[in-house]
Length: 330
Ligand SMILES: NC(=O)c1ccc[n+]([C@@H]2O[C@H](COP(=O)([O-])OP(=O)(O)OC[C@H]3O[C@@H](n4cnc5c(N)ncnc54)[C@H](O)[C@@H]3O)[C@@H](O)[C@H]2O)c1
Ligand SMILES: O=P(O)(O)OC[C@H](O)CO
Image (cartoon, rainbow, N blue to C red):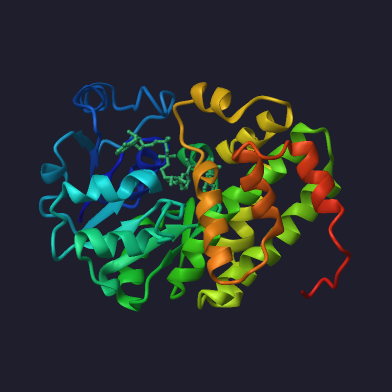
């Protein structure tokens, strides 16, 4: 099968490697022709994964139409806030399965990525899937064991997507709850920013565990309000991804939060990395969704206030700890 992976950043390149390992032919689309040429010349992605040898069945191109021509599946690996404008310039094949990898909520609209794909590219929900889970790219590129979820409202599409990316090191489960999987993937980045701040402030495992657990509680509340299956939040897309992201120094979101906790500014940290930390923008859209649905999300709220420059991380922790005591179930 030919699979087009659209986006040659860290995760797009790694996912291309996984699909290659799964026995399929991969066309990796890079925005810059010079990056596509370098990938083809060296068999590596010098900008994002210089130390990883890519499968021989992976070829890079910089023309999106060429990448997608004849594809069995088109995998979207561009950052959330760029997906709408990127897709607007493409003709996505009308018979391909379309897979979203991005973990974010669109600013201004509150749309999940599958909703953006549907709106802009006219892809019906039964052709759409989301792949998400505890998937730190660098570990997966090193072929360390990991599990993930292929979610679609169509069981056959979820099965098709499972078939193109299941490998001995990457174990993929199907799931029917697209809403819950996407929401969990976006929100865990916001909670990871908060955990990073706590780590940067010098707090230990109790603070981290408390933020993870209460972060999961508020994510589940929002998910249920949006129609998600509550069990999703106990699964790979929920708890699994939240734990991996909050626990690992490889996470860009947790690392970004840690730098904030140490006193650096959002602008300064953003300037020093070319990689996307989705939670920095999605915290505002998650907060807006929570307000729209009348859901209390104190951790996301405080993270958004720190990112907006309205609170310091230390004040944020003090505020969160000073809230009125309540019942764990609420
Ligand atoms: N890196 C991971 O471990 C990982 C794992 C799972 C999911 N994800 C998700 O995958 C998505 C992509 O992450 P990544 O790790 O590849 O990010 P990255 O920062 O490594 O790469 C970003 C990619 O987006 C492209 N890009 C940047 N600006 C763009 C624009 N204006 N228009 C079009 N393309 C643009 C870049 O060229 C690059 O290919 C994110 O939503 C992320 O949350 C990442
Ligand atoms: O590096 P992060 O924080 O974007 O997280 C990467 C993946 O989403 C982890 O599953």
